Length: 57
Image (cartoon, rainbow, N blue to C red):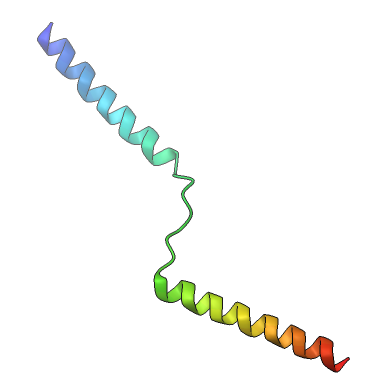
């Protein structure tokens, strides 16, 4: 019985690892603090350009 149990556990463990690789996480990609600051600065710059172009028209 022990031999069957060990073999079954090994096979189950292998299947579990394979399934984990197939189903990737839905978590969003990590964005560092520096990248967030840069993105925010770019967004502010784009918004300010939009305001300037709207005023000039």
